Image (cartoon, rainbow, N blue to C red; front, top):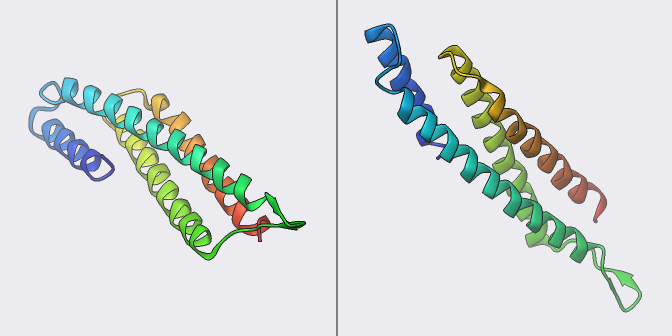
Length: 130
């Protein structure tokens, strides 16, 4: 969906340039936008659960020592930050382009905020769960 959404918005811009309106693509865009947000929200919930599990594991105690993060967990957290940044960037772009096409871009704002918050949480786990 991250890769498909910009292409659909490009199609809407083409529709706007040709016809002066987006009547041909409007319904499809609304459906696609709703589905994209649904999938992104599902991913954000999944990542949130994974972050909680990773954080709990890193802060667990074994034989009197705090476990910390394993090297694979550190790599996964770095990848997760990049993935969340990609979701946030895509949602920001979708919001901007939706507004340019005459839609209300507010539906994208919770995704932008949640992706940013989760990326910050992942960075904090990396920094403090040594």
